[in-house]
Length: 286
Ligand SMILES: *[C@@H]1O[C@H](CO)[C@@H](O)[C@H](O)[C@H]1NC(C)=O
Image (cartoon, rainbow, N blue to C red; front, side, top):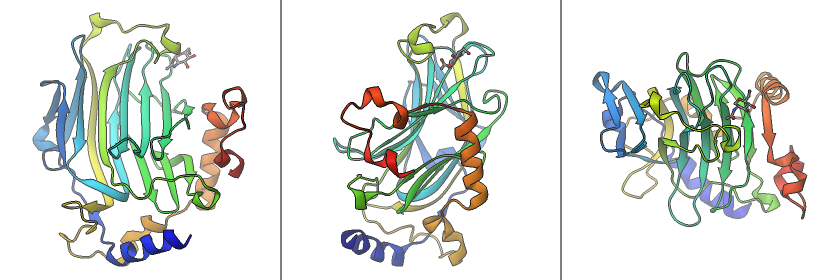
């Protein structure tokens, strides 16, 4: 804990929230797909496309070290079987950290699976999967990552679906030192994504399109590799940094429980066959 405090004290002192007004031209670069990713409507909308030749992707210009990051997504409609839309934050290198949302497509009328994972220092194997309580292709919905020194919370339209606590005191590595970029991509994964790879992508329906809007980040931004935490804006009122110590209140705990009881389809913490040496430490802590 001593090392944690020495890292955090100077950081908190410098903490200034950067709240971005959404503009895809300013905040993101298209990184993949040769024209298949498009920024539209003066920067308010971004679309990713997938056809038989290639998928597409984008990433944030900024690197973030902690933040509360919201994005609205509208997923590939109709028969999206075989497609995967990944939306995540990730650091670089062989010991990378990553917080993942992945949306596994399905046949028309069959449910998407929302697949989540947390990597710390290059190690993942923490998959949890959910059905959604709405049709994620009919409209935009908000997918959020809260990442602060105590916890990671995945939320959908403000409802928490997963919490990963900082259990460093129990030797569970936790993302907290490496800056991450926001990334997204749409690609073909029909070898595994839909019913374990049984349902293939129907290329007659291509191109497949996923759409993004209303990006918002209250976050610590790294500039020039220094954790200057957003010195480019005037300091906000201290209440707007509430995300930095945010935890789930009892109402949100109830919502989390509701999702997990009714919509969770896979939890690595219940998969005893997969971990013959015993379940990961964090599984006994929730
Ligand atoms: C697709 O639909 C089937 C049938 O309802 C379901 O078992 C499966 O979990 C759904 N999602 C994926 C990604 O396969």
